[in-house]
Structures are given as structure tokens and as C-alpha cells.
Length: 104
Length: 422
Image 1 (cartoon, rainbow over the protein chains, first blue to last red):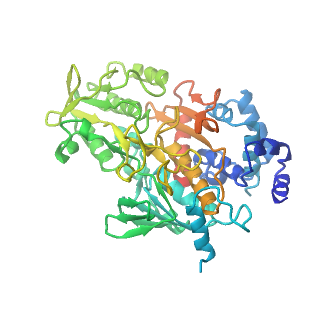
Image 2 (cartoon, rainbow over the protein chains, first blue to last red; image 1 turned 60 degrees about the vertical axis):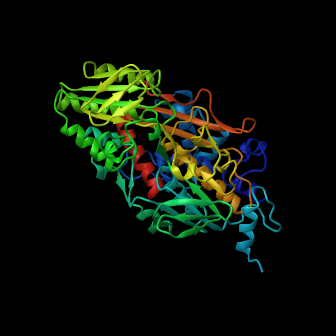
Image 3 (cartoon, helix red, strand yellow; image 1 turned 30 degrees about the horizontal axis):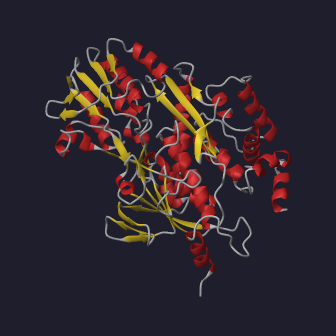
């Protein structure tokens, strides 16, 4: 129940099937996935001021998802994000975008 | 009577997947984790163990150096574009912001059965879980002529950033115009696959500007450039007349006095001889009874980074036997650290580790002061093969060397340093 409320709060109901498929869900899955972005975008998406890398914390989830989809399709020009965004499943990108959106 | 903390410790020691009666999933982890090595892997592990446990888990970081010095970006110091101060950072953030107990010392022995380790200063440290992030040590036994400290201070590696970085820069500054800088590269795998080629470019860039009659000679034990081959081939062509690349040129022996690299069929005398030696897991991992692959790299479980034969000891960074196509890089060590930290907190709370770990790697390389190329990859866990594998259709390299990625390379450095240390 607790998990369902947590998922609903993040708007993840549609992705739960994928998350559940491999076994019991890890409550920290989104956190762990988002941590793979920190090397360039800062811990919890808070990039170092003046570093020249986009901060992701607090970015609207839909905006972030659209950017990631555009990187994947090639619609949005990139040096590296087109290659990186193709390494994650749609469900994983949803978890990552929701996690960063919730970092206020 | 056993208190809750002891009970959790006992349960965690009993191994993964222990069901704790009366404990719902998500119970708070407790215990003491010792992290050995404060580089890209260890510093990240120390911070994330504290951050993700809401400071509930005690963390001690044992590091022999007083400050962190970055290997990535150190080739720019050797080329003269950056100073040591640009790649040197304090451990104060880990200590003051995150409450990590930072101990300047070396670990000389691990007693995994008793879950304690011995320090060079004479003390002992107990742990519930241990993270070893010892990096690499060099297999000098494969390089006759480099047995003595005197020979090693004359023929430098500069493959661990620090005093050797400064010394190599000094040798290049002292080299006369018309001199030869020779760089030898060991067979893969070694720390930072593109690093030697980046170094060759940046030294060539410096010599082209300051000592244009000089030469850069790259003696590669491998049959071809091991990383970003097409991009480095293009970069080397821009240094035509200065830089010469020779594949299949494995170093067999060194005459340090005359700075001569002895190959199978050839001898190369240099004014500055820079030997990147063959490498293996750092001494403490190699001497602690951990199962090694090829007698060199630690065999780990990819869900937790726990040694396959030594419970309670997690190994991350360059010291592990890598997954297919996974490089030994600072970036990937940082990613190992986060998976290990998450898994350790799961285990200390009596939970199973995340069954679907994901790692991402990016390596930027400077081909001159202003232009950069990258390689990227994403690795997802394959439950059937029990290893992380690169995702088909993802990752790749730069289209061409460019100035925009020089900005991103420095943004990467600033953010990953903060991700580890601040």
C-alpha cells in the first residue's frame, strides 16, 4: 500500500508493471538510477554553480521526459545525451525524471 | 541481551536476503562501514553511504594521502595547461558536511573472518562491511631495470597523480628542443584506456608550441589504439612530423641510466622516458585472500560488488575484474561506488540489493588545449549472465574533436569532484 501511494505521488502507476517484473520492487530504484546522472549533473541533480552543466533538480517531469525522448530520437541535437539516453528503458527514464522533479 | 543494533549486525552478517521478523522493507540500516582508498571510488562510497543512510551508518575512510589529487585532468598539468592546484581537493567536505571519519593511514592487513583490519600506524579497525577501493598497483616485476627506487625516479609513470605528475612536467620543461619524449603503453586492461593517447597528444601540443624540433614516440604494446581509435588517429595526424605511433611495441626491459626502452627487436633511447607499467588490483586487495581473475583483478558479484569468496568485503573501481567493454575509469569507479553503497545499506537493513543495477560511463580526452573527444557507454544487469552488459544501440564517441566538449569535460570534472567530496 505504502509503495502504491508513493508511486501514485510520483505519477508512476503506468510504469509499475515493468518495475515489478524482475521481483520485489526496490523503494530506492529511482534514487539509484538518478545517481548515474550525478557525475555531470551534480549530486541529486544539483549541478555545481558556474560549472556549465545543466542542473536537473526541480525540473518539471514532463519537460525533462520530453527532452530525453528528443535526445533519444535525435530531434534534439546533442554531443553525448543522444548516446546516453538510449541506454535506459522508457520506464527507467520516467523514474529518473520523476526523481529529479521531486528534488525541490 | 542483544540490542536492535547488534541484532541487525548479526542479521546482516548472516548474508543477503535474510528476512527480519517484524521488520518491514525499508527499515533503517545501522552499522559501521570502513572504506579503504579515497579516490573516485572510495570517496564517492563514503559520501553516499552517509547521504543515503541519513547519516545513520557510521563511515570511516582510510586514505594514505592528505588530499585528493585527480588522475583525470592531470594530463593537462603534464602538458602545461593546468596546475596541480586545479586537480587537488580537500577531504574536509566528507568530514565536516557528511560526518565521515577520515583517517590518514594505510591498511596493511584485512582479517575478513574477524571483520577487522590493521593499520600501518599500528591500530585496528573493526567493521560490519568493508569497501576496498585501492586502485591499481604496478607489476614492476615484469620490467627488469625498474627494480630500484632510483630507476623509478628517473623513468616515471605519472599514472597515479601526485608527485610523479609534477616530476614528469619538470622533465619535459628541462628537455632540450630536439629531444625525444617516449611513452610506453602496457597491454590492456590498464587504468584509463584513452589516457596514454591523450597524454601523447598534450605533450605533442606543448612541444609543438615550445620545442618544435622535438619528437613524441608512442610505443604501444597493443596491436592498435585501445580507445577512441579513429578520433585519436585523426588527432595524431595533426601532429605529423612530431608524433609517431608504433603499435605492437611491448616494453621488455628498461635501461634507466640511458633512458632506453628495450623492445623485442628494437631499442629506443629517449630524453624523457615515460613508462606506464602493467597493472593489477592494488596491494591490499591482492594480499587479502580475495579471489582474483588472472591473478590480477578482484572477482565480484555485480549486484553488490561483494567479493565472490570473502563475505563482507566489497571491492570497487580499477581493482575489479571488469564487465565486458567496461573501462577502468574514475567515472565508472564513482558508479561502482553508488551501487555498492546502495547494496551495503540494503544488506545492513536486512534487505536484498537492487536486482537491476545500471552503470554509465563517460570519458573525455583532450587532443589539445581546446579540443576534446568523448566515449560513453551504459551497462545494464543481465540476470541470466549475472554481469552488467553494454546496452546495444547506446553509447558511442564524438563525431569529431570539438571545443564545446572541452567545456563539458571541465563541467564533468567539477561536478564529479563535488559528487565525491562536497
